[in-house]
Length: 155
Image (cartoon, rainbow, N blue to C red; front, side, top):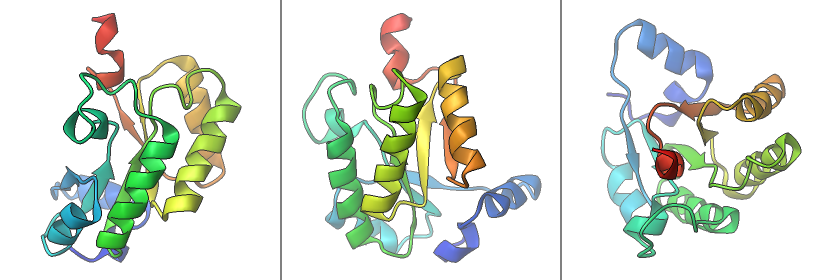
């Protein structure tokens, strides 16, 4: 596995890895201590997920996690692992109401934390519209489809 952040910096790098059937490893991290430990590992990327609400904050779901909390935890992880590829999760409510809100939220995560990409959940047409607008502007977006924590109430 690759530990050099630059090697997985751009979408083309991720696509090349996939095309070459090379594994890509991503682990969650929520603070600088976790990130420092993972910075020395061969893990390719770190994700600050909305699961911080359950793992760290003690909530029984991911729904209460706010954009400001994701930004806070992304900053901590970036400090602890400055060379790792960092993905910031888009928490519930940050993009569902309006594509403009989603774009603003994604840009905040990128600008305020040094994240390399943002992660969206779902395939709703409004979500896909927001993702298309972001990627057209060059914002790296990763998707989570299938059974997603933010949609567990719908199952």
